[in-house]
Image (cartoon, rainbow, N blue to C red; front, side, top):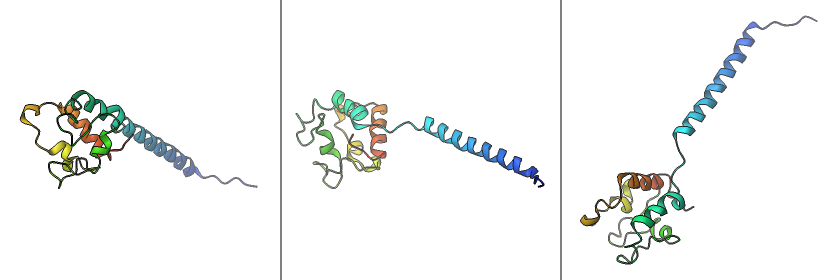
Length: 130
């Protein structure tokens, strides 16, 4: 029996191995660049705990931002002061009243740009309750 020689087969196998390596390597690089989205319990609630719960619900009883209560008062809930707006619209930080409403001028700088960006990223990723 004569053995069939396919010189191009070796090149095809090498190309497939290289392509697979590039695909896996590219996926790993993307995963390294795209960190996990912020989580309510680990990233968002600590911001509320540090910056918001002293007034919410004490001075502003229509919104309770304490741990275990904040999500119920935010996710797809109409804003008490502007009922046409929802406090958190999943996937749409630009439409979420939590981020776009004009704050009390004395509290304008209460949240840092980084904290606002973290909240926006959480909303953009779907504002999941974890």
